[in-house]
Image (cartoon, chains in turn red, purple):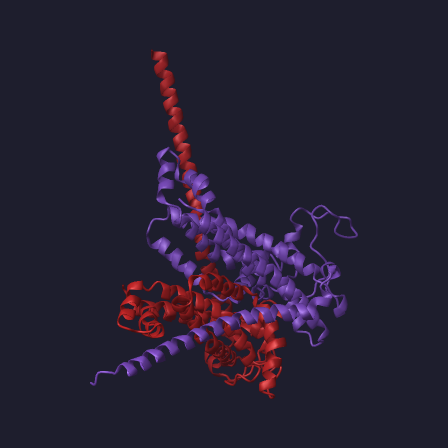
Length: 311
Length: 311
């Protein structure tokens, strides 16, 4: 009996030891999984650290006032000027052209798919749109330079070989799927009862879509537009290929110009020594780009909260 | 107000219906423009590049003469970089997704991680290039290597992998977890033997979409300083690397300089000699083929998944 008891005890302690081991390894695994999730935070910290620390060196040599007000961007010349407005103007003009294409087209496609098209059309059209959004931007750059620019030159004979217009138009086509897909999701989330109420009053489909569904989905639409703006501002290769990479303070889309992103590519292609002021300019430009997209994202979140509809 | 006559009401209804039809046509036209762009793009590249699309094109290095240039170093580089990217992004992304869905308590730490992931998805890709130029290339001393490029793209697609992992896990009903834990499995055992296998198709879809995005990314790789002209391949493990007869180690290739398909295309489109446009078209067609087939696989997987799973 007593021997039996001892072996029982032994078994129990074995099981306890096993349990303790299990707890330790469970904890360990949880720690590892948490570390993986924390990588995203480290990435953000890394981005901010790299951009701010390199820009800090840059701003020790160049005053912020010059950076914001100078009208020339010639950091690689002997007579160096660092006026970021030159790059910002190119970025804003090309984004503006892109959004003039993408927002109307994306919204019309979204309204069509959510309110007019039958489910078969929708099932086919959405994946096809996603394919359009998946095309590599370098291929879109090729498209802008070698197909769209020659076509536009037939309409505007004065258009140079590189222009913000052609890059912006193609960028707009690239952004359409993002806006269409997100807007369609937002409009489909509007409850059927609201449409039925409108139809019952004798409204047509289009009237219901514009006066009932769109206002109800406005926060989702705004979010998709903001995403579109972020994409346009951050887009690089289409502009690097088709907009000419010439720093040029202009608000005219018919001219070639450099954007913040295409300038970074241009510098990265040369061999600037690590630590030189030319090398630091790309971080200052990158910080400006990040601040611009951040501002749009904050505005987007604010809009979403301001106009959120409760059904 | 005068009551309307039947005639007036009929006119009103007809006008409403006309507007509906016009809008429907507009929607179809907008969708067709998207489709047209894809066809124009693929068709133009195929027509221009058809002559170059033979076996030699895939087995020749880039050359100064357009007609002898090939994409050997580009496609090998692309595959190796994608390999590193997948190896880094899949475990990290899946682990982070599991942590956030299965382990995380609702507190400020998880809130920060979640807000971070949403914000990272909106950061322009070129900023990731700057991050990795500062951190991987210089701070960690990895140089302008396949490893640096793979890790950069892994960070870039991490939000996509995390989000799709979470969506796949969220679709698994709670009874699966309860059943597993009721028979004494720990949380990790539940994840390891139930959650991860059941979420696998969803995770795979996200990984493929992420990799398809990474394959077309040019800007961050140019930023870290990838070369645009390379006439050698990374060392094959355990083969002699030069005249001295030293064998390459198993992992020597990860530190090798490289080029990728989008950079090769960029290089060719930015040359003044139009003979290289033909090469750019042919390489663009190959790249489009890679990206579109990956997207098609992902869409097919998602479609099949939605049909098959019935809990």
